[in-house]
Every structure is written in C-alpha cells, then in structure tokens.
Length: 248
View 1 (spheres, rainbow, N blue to C red):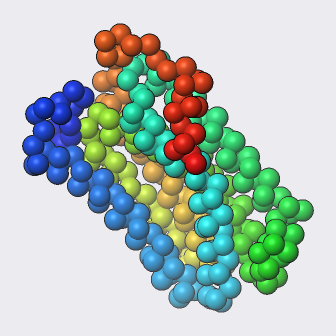
View 2: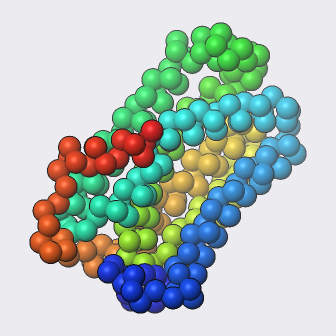
C-alpha cells in the first residue's frame, strides 16, 4: 500500500477503526459529491430561459440515462472482487467494454426518432415541447453509459488496491468539469436548458472516465501476473454468472 489510506488484501487481521475510516471516508465523500449534481444542475436550469419544460425534459432524459446505466453500475463491485491478476483484469475489462457497448447501442436505438417519438408522446404522454427537448437531451447523453462503465471498472481496481482517495479525486474532477460545461453550454452558448444540462453531465463523466484511467496507473502496476495461491482467472462464463445478479 503506497498511499497508506486503505486496506491491503489479506490484511483483515490488522484492521483498526482508524484504518477502516481512512479507507471509507473518501468513498463516502464521493457519493456526497455525486448527490449534489442533481440539485446543482436543477438550480442552474431554473435560472435559464423557459425553465419549466426544460426541467421536465431534463428529468426525463436523466431517468432514461440512469435506466440504461443500471446494468453497468455494479462493475465497480465486480472489478473490486474479481481483478486479482493480469488475466482477470483483461477479461473483466473486455466484459466491461462489451456490456457498456451493448447499453450504449440500446440507448441509441431508443434515441432514434421513429422509436423515441411514440415512446415519449404515446407511452409517457409528454407534451410536444417536452418530448422534443427530452429527445435532444437523450441524444447528447449517449456517451453516458460507456463512460460510467469505464470509470466504475477502473474505480473498482483502485479501491481493491486501497487508494480510495483517488476515487474521490476523480469525482471532484467530474464536478468541476460539469460546472464549467454548464456555464459554457447554458450561459455562453445559450443552449436550451435540458440540452445544456445533458451536455454538462456527459462532459463531466467523460472527463472523470479519463481521470479515473490515469489515476488507476499505480494500481494497475501493482497487479500481479498470477492470482493468490496461483488460482486461475475466472472464465467469461464465470464472470457473467457472478455479475448478472448485480446487474439485476
């Protein structure tokens, strides 16, 4: 453990309350920062032009993005549990790419106008203006599932190595990038609020994904060629069986 803020593998017997707290508080801080995203963006959207339909459309687009994100959100837990050696890292990374790509394709299919219009107007019953704004926001959010899957995979690798402060640092980068993007898209470029909010969210997670990969370098260097006690890496079938309850 090079940073002294985590719990090394096999170190359960040496745990203390202080060590657990130092490991945990950056993760708690991460979720606190993430919980501020919604109110922060809503407060800005409420001050832009035509706030009521834009807030409604942004809410619809965000919920749909969360729906397509849901199968990949637990990749953090999977990589924390399964990445024990180089081969398990490569296999779970490939699994992450496949799952993230599939989620993005499904979201892209919903964003097709012939699909989205009857879904939004017919099934959801959205007014025309809200449906149009929500559709544009969903298109802008298409990078969201892949970026979330990518960064949560690497966050799990970082957590496994005990460097939890790097996870919090990545989230701080995300919040800063999102705030700057909101000023750019909503204030400077004067885009519709729903589109500006979606662009800000997408920008934030893309920047965080890149930051997470960079911050994971020391953790990746620590991964051994062989797992503990020489155990073989999980097969793709074993990874799928492990993961599908988490996806559900």
